[in-house]
Image (spheres, rainbow, N blue to C red):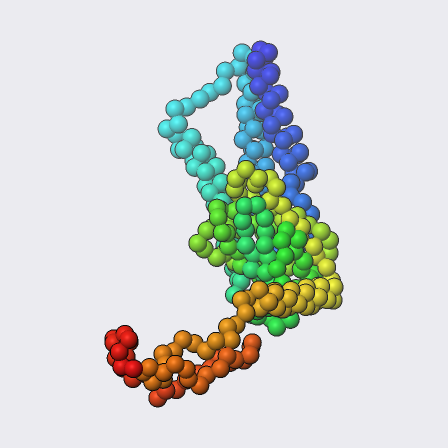
Length: 318
Ligand SMILES: [Cu+2]
């Protein structure tokens, strides 16, 4: 056996045994799953891993076997691929990859997607926490409805880059971008969804473990893409409700203070009645005093309006 053949045989053996072994031992390189449905994604990764490792063992094992068996003067017999056997083997290998490896991916993911994309049913769950999430260069802004459970009121709670959710309750996220394409990535919850300007995306997940987890942007979105990170804090239900109520109270108070400041900043109301022509032509004065500040402006009835035409005759009609 020449040194070249020996090298290739060793390389094939390593590829056949060592690399699938290492890959299977390490498993998918994802952070620990903290969600209720993340196991579906992990199952897809693991089963694909095992099947692809099996293909690698067969392919590289066959290569190593051929190199070892036909070493020395014994020449390997070969055909031009025209015999039935020569056609059947590649067809069987292709069918295995297509039906078993790809088929498993297709069937499992199609069934899983029914659960993972059933956002509407989850949103109808009275326990669901709804969040409107806005991605922008380079932060995450989350809006929760307050205790009134209605978006767009003074009770809305808005936070940036630090979200809180309760453990054990479904969370339904609607996602939008106000500038470029971003992607919400919650690695511990196996959630990844693109935020596309002009569209609203939706996704749901449920935390099963308490703790602080990473929010990342999975789409290169500009200079400070790498800084577009946030914290997703999973807390128990009571802590979440207390936090939400406190934040909603703060939001209402801030809104009231803003309204008051706006009112104070507004120009003082004029004590004058609105501009009106004299009630009769040539009148020097008429009954209508200045009103106190804040009092309603003096309204004059249409009968009090001056006769038509006096403005057309300046200086006349006295
Ligand atoms: Cu981004």
